[in-house]
Length: 548
Image (cartoon, rainbow, N blue to C red; front, top):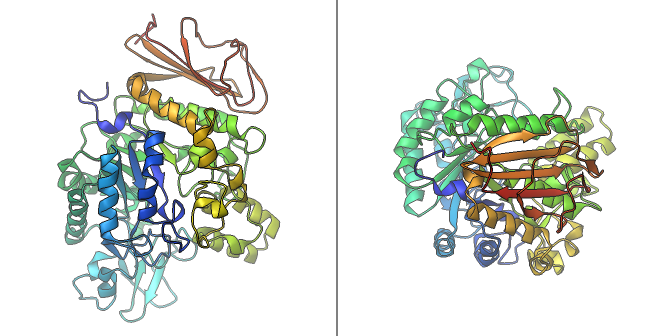
């Protein structure tokens, strides 16, 4: 086992809610905290253990809440602090913990710290942010912001530039300032006192940026900062902590998720998320999925972190397109491919994350006009590529495949107006397929994607092999089948998935003799000689003579 004492989050499943799009309670077209409270029974039925809540703090909403103006306040669009406290207590009564999304790399430019910081070079809050001298029109260096344009913004009142890795309304914090760190730690402890069950740490690998050296990720002080934060805050409670780390590799992931608890519980790493874009291209530069690389990458992380760290397992989040449209089949085989993708992921070692609507097989949306999109990254890319001469058809093709808004259309609850999300006009249009894909239909259907996810979640709680078993890849050279086994103390779990819509013939099949079929996305399983389109199977035995 990884630890002598198993952490609660090891056999848990976490559900991500993007509050703006989950459930609106007051008819303003924007999801809110009271809407989430009204849907807790649905999540309890699914069987999840914790909710990761995207930011609900006070914010001008320039980047949908990832630009925080008050870490201890709730934005009125989502409700009140009292609503937040009720959500924490109501969820706890159902055995569900609330995980807050912490944005510690930057604030909003409307945060009181920054309002003060830009007044004077000698203001006490000035050093809370990253500033450099310069001349107007000549920024300190050529660094670019992730959302386009320069990463430096001129402030004429004080004759300096501030650094922002994202929107110009998201100035980066200066973690080299110990007083700034103390303020952040006190805020974290304040939320811990409110009873939250953990934190997801936004772009945590960028807090130790060194802009003079053109370094944003994995700065030299990164892990010392995280260890200090963990000691001052997280280690004082029974929390799950997961860092978003686009710059993570298997070696530094062992530091982040060290079993001694000195840093975090785990990180989100995104190595698999770039496998359908052109080499040296951006995410918008589309390419077919490199399936063999997917097998290698998943296997590498499973093997490298076994007993030395912990994996997060995810296909979707609020920044990614819908997986059934991305690497599954959102047409004829939507149901089978959604179940296959779930089977593959949930059989691995780590903590699975379900993004809202994933359990229904919600799909990407293809809005015909850029006017229907709300994501700042998408809108900026459309403008930049139009100016560079890209055709609008090509730009929209990339947006339909990769826009963050694919994951942000409203949750599809039923076939009523606006999918039951709101009685008003939704902040972003509903995906038109909601009449066929919705929770009301699926919770009643025993063969639905929802009930398949429910079964996967219950299996994780029933069999400790999901937490403890060592991983090995089967059929590594097969160009169509992703198969693996997990072994521990006489127990064995075998997962076999056809990743494509063509039938897959199994020549050197896994040894499933004496193994019980736990799950098949076609219901009944035929002899293991060929797999049907997107077929997935999961077998188990506790009598494995080749046990570890």
